[in-house]
Image (cartoon, rainbow, N blue to C red; front, top):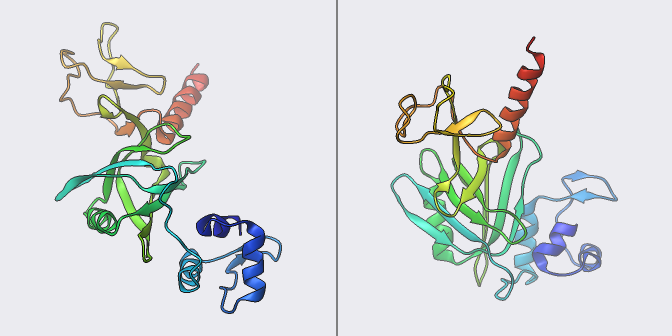
Length: 233
């Protein structure tokens, strides 16, 4: 109910009144009588049909920079953004907001690439800048008279941190770094190779995998590393 109210930019009590007084409000699909849960698409369609959904023009905006194979890089500023980050590595992150129709169509094309989109930088008020290494998809696309409500989603395990200078921050799990290794090291055991490092260098392939530094996957690897060190004799 609270999210329906946020979508329509009204109080929750107003939504309760709509359910009681107006015809055709979608039935809950889950939850309970006290905390019902609704299908987002059905609710958005009902709000549009009853002129309850308006496109904001003066609210906060996010900065979204995405790239995808075969598609020009996009820089979009969704209005009234909402970022929902998962608490565990198996969850799903989501960001939503209002865009111009042309921007929404461009996002849909980029989302259709073989590996989805890569978010080089997502800056939402109240959050640190986020980066996502691929697999970003458009999970909702609802058009109205004044704009398009778009939601993007991706697996939380590929979320990381964006850096204004170098773009996506990455670590590589190193192959037996020596004491004199000049590469930058991190608590999770990952490194960023220095170009003059004889063992790794800027072009060395990581032994295990790349992952976004400071992200949820990085935290999981840190825990694994700490657990292994604790278990060592």
